[in-house]
Amino acid sequence: MWGLLFLNTLVFTSGGVVHIPSFAGKGITQGALALATLIALTINQKIRIRPNVFLCLISLLVLDTVMAAAIPQHLGTVYRTFRLADFVFTLWLLTPWWGRRDMLLLRCHLRWLLVSLGTVLLGLVLAPGHALAISPGLEGRLAGVIWPMEPTQVAQYAALSTGLIVLLWFGRLLTGRMALLGVVVTVPILLLTHTRTALAALVAGLLLAGLSLFTVNARVRKFFAASLAVVAVALVTAASVITTWLARGEGTQGLTTLTGRTSFWALVVQQPRTRFEEIFGFGLSNASINGLPIDSNWYASYMMEGLVGVAVCAMIIVWLFTNSLFQPRGVQRALALFLITYGTVSSFTEVGFTDVSTYMLNLVVAASLLIVPIARKTV
Image (cartoon, rainbow, N blue to C red; front, side, top):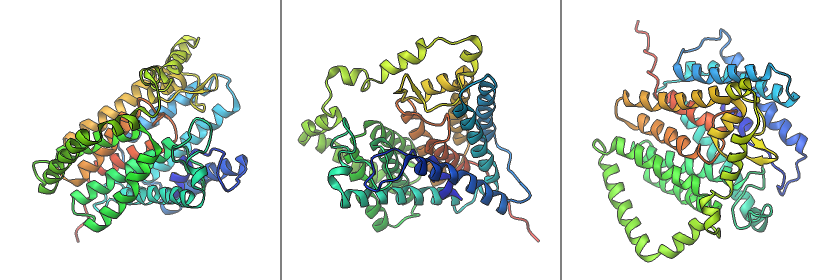
């Protein structure tokens, strides 16, 4: 079921080496949600749920989008609203499996992240030229071509996998060989995508998660010491290479405007809107304006869900961080902190958890790690 939910969040784009018609690709991803809901109802026939603040906040986003869709809109807006509602309903049906000591949802999530990266590697082996030049303007950036995926999407999966693998190794839940094998695969993929946001979010997430374990885990302290030494040597010996990689061939204007993103954000703010649209937004869309991608969770939320959506998104992040402060130190809290931090950092330059997305699934996994386990009944 989690695999179907994950498949539902994949953004289908054209350009793969295997020709998949657009209607078929979108039908596969969107049809996966209906099947996931059906399976959820099958295994949770009595519709038992565990009340929690996180999904209540996510449900407020659904209510907000319903309010926006109440005014006549495009048919796509209404469809996306029903899709989000169905997605959140399925997440509610999963709550009995939250808080498990074996971290079931996390293991499922990591498994499907690695499966997705496996298809990227397969595409790189079969068609390296195509995988590194999927469309104009993206030459040299690794993308998925078996199942079409943009470089930013590939980078997100690689960064998340890297961080989760390292933290599981910190907690001795993964052997050193398995962790090394995973990192040797995921880190090069991340670097080949040339995606700065994913790299920055990975570093920030690992830093905060690692600090939460710093005083109780000797392995974390050794890792931080080794990492500082490696970074120091890299800055001295390969500063020009690092600068070139980060610049990605862009000039000063490209860097200051975040590859043109600030221009799109200005269009969002300047968009004429009524008082109702300012509060509740224009309804769910493909997170673009005048055909240009918004590339920011907060501006996209303002565009689609209004000020209410922005406030709810902020409350989600604040609640998760606050809740993590009251959890005992350990690998589960560290994993949750990594996912929350990653989502927070990346939300500034990528569309995140305002709609059905992998970012929302990331936060769901984080919330499931922060919930108190259900006490077993004793005879």
